[in-house]
Length: 442
Image 1 (cartoon, rainbow, N blue to C red):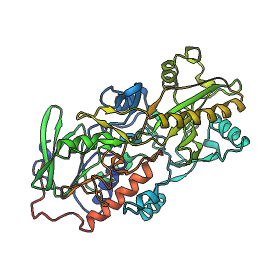
Image 2 (cartoon, rainbow, N blue to C red):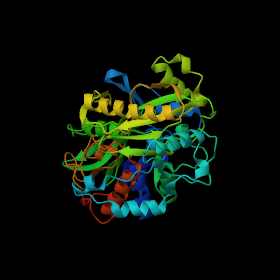
Image 3 (spheres, rainbow, N blue to C red):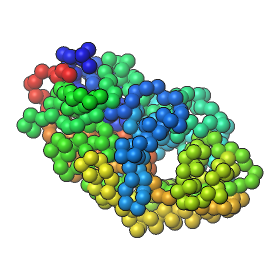
Image 4 (cartoon, one colour):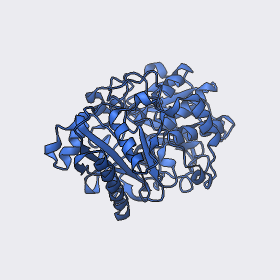
């Protein structure tokens, strides 16, 4: 840290997921000096089970349990959960955002030109996803390949590294934007856990963080908190914004599984194809996961007879748009029950998944326990933020899934990149309040 003494910064970005990495990349491209602070590691992605467990499997840190034994997983690593996601590029909820004064259509179109957004080539769609898609179509469902953030020439068949972090850089992740920011002159400190925002009066001036047991402070005229749907509200509460972290969504999901005799696989890109059911409030896709994760899902519901059937088991994910509710503890613990209506959505989707699996020739059909992904809405626009993602403190902004104002139920990456571009444009156009203070130093 000594080499940063006296360094001048124009902005501090806390968190390197899709939102934060985008802001850092865009600001640094405009010659702004940016400091990125990341709680997790910046070590190269190896695609191993052990490394993935360190990123997203540590209880109380990245693996959180709420009421009813529902598990929520988040990636604490450079790039955030995008390192472990399935790279699905669902369009943003433009109408919903527009009703809150946010229009990111231009930024999203720019992103689609900048990043490799397209459905996978047929030869990259695995046999299990193909069987599910063909069967669903035979039953009359409008089941189609999903758009992906994917460099398809780098992608490999018979590979299950997507869940573990792609070591081939075939799957776009926010790490790539972090690298661009670094090439533009930005600086990164990993293993840096931000505790609070430093303020003078009603203006944010910096952050306090710890690294390897030591405390540090960093100062800049603009602070962007992008620590995720759980991390950001905890930081803001510690900074005096006590309303953060209430009435949020967490995108509950289940997997429905069944064994077939004529396929031997289990190593393919998950969520290759699927279908939205907007009126019913859920989405369904194939979801072939690695063997150890499959065995965990299977053992959790006591289907020990299926533990060694991974290579022949078709898997369909049902993910619901849940209602807002619950609260976070001051340390980031999740306290939310799965509402009866939301459970009903998942069970309704599970019945459809069973129908598809049966027509695909599957036997021994069962469903996993409930898990959750994409926690958000904890620092909502229209509640704690204005349309420019600004808090009640001057020069303090938020840019991650916590800002989404309503439950949505779909992967948020494309939305977050669009919001990051929009926020960076606002800041470079002079949106932050001029304080007249010197740029800060670590």
